[in-house]
Structure formats: C-alpha cells, structure tokens
Length: 268
Image 1 (cartoon, rainbow, N blue to C red):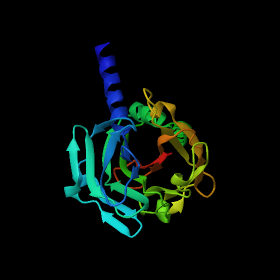
Image 2: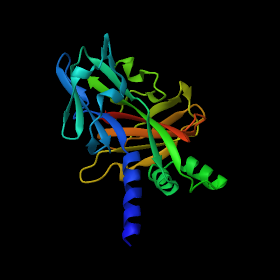
Image 3: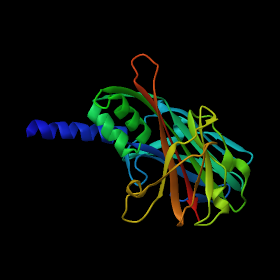
Image 4: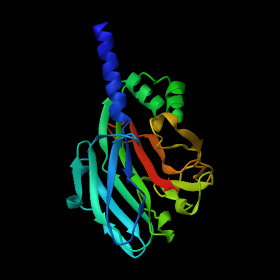
C-alpha cells in the first residue's frame, strides 16, 4: 500500500508540474492613458499562480500599442509570493497587445504519468496516436515552452494593435477586437504554428467565476481549415483561450515537443 501511494504521489507530481499553464494577466484590462500600470504572470491556473518565472526563461517580452513599443526588461519584473509582476507606463489611447515567450525546458516521465498529463490537458489526438501504436506505457522525454499574450484597452479608442503578431512558435492572433463586442457576441482568433494556420486543433477557453475553477469549466472547440476559432463569451469579466501543440520530435533525446499558447482579454 505504501508503494502504491508513493507511486500515486509521483504521478500526481508529474501531472501537476507538466500541467502548469502560463497566463499574462492584469487585475483590470482597462487603463487610463499615460499612467503607471502593472501586469503579472500566473504560472499554474488562470485563478492561481503556483510559481514565479525565472528571468533566464524569458526570451521575448514586449508590449505594443499605437505609437508605442516597449521591450519588457528584467528590471521591470519583481516577485511577490508565487507571482511575477511587471511595472510599466502605458501611452496614448488605443488597444494594446502584450506578449512573452519562454525558452524550452525538458522533463522526463513514465508512460502512465504522460498519459495522465495528456488526459488532464485534453490532448486527445496525442492520446489516440499512442493508443493506436501501443506506446501508451512508454516513458517519454518532452521539451516544452510557453508563449503568452494579453490584450489591453487604454481609454476608449479601439486601434488595430489587437491583431499584433509576435512571431512565437505558437500564437493566438485576434481577428476580432474583444473591446468592440459585448457579452454573447463572437470573438475570433487565428491559431498560428511557426507562422502558419494550425487547422483542426483543439483549443480551450474559460472565464473567472467566483468560487469556481476556470479550468474545471473550460469549453473546447477545434480550429477550422484556416486555423480560425470563434468563441462566444457569455459573461462580462476576464477570459482566456489556450492550447497545447504536441508533436513527435526528431531531435536526439527528445520524444515529444510541446508549445503552449494562451491569450487573455476582458469582456465589458
């Protein structure tokens, strides 16, 4: 029994470590022009950060707005408890897009832990492939990296920067400015992998709700042939859309490579 419980604890730890999503967030996504502002990174779930972000993991961090481009540098970041924050100043009125990309890291796990992780994250295609090839019990080495974006609104003027493309390995690009729609109306995104539309790919989206875990109330949909996904946020507040692109790797010593993407925004 002790050995069984120990094994369960190891599997749970693998799933927990591997399933940390990264979100680029704000307390409010609405700012006054030419003021000090704070953003933060949640490394865990949309509702709770469980780890800060090591500065050496960040490879590309920037914020774009009308006549505004800011490289987020190390001296702008600081940690409080388990959350990494960044302080900066916004510029003129408009819609802003922020993005942060992290460098890849490696993790090894046994077959069961990897299957549990795939199930937890809704990676149905990879699960099906492993089952079809009879490799569901095979241990794996995975290389993973995370790429996060946020859309902010400064003042009342809507501008084209909501559709900014940062060139991350995987990235959601907004095709609709969420600050021009109301609850229940459509918001569209295009999912790009290496700059090309990622078709028929599962994405998840959800919102913060008092007393409830956003991950437990996710909805899922697949992108169309052009990598487009359309969602209908049905309530005001903070929202996210997320996905993981898991591929077999041809690199020596790597079985799978995953790139994670999230984009956060608000609905009035």
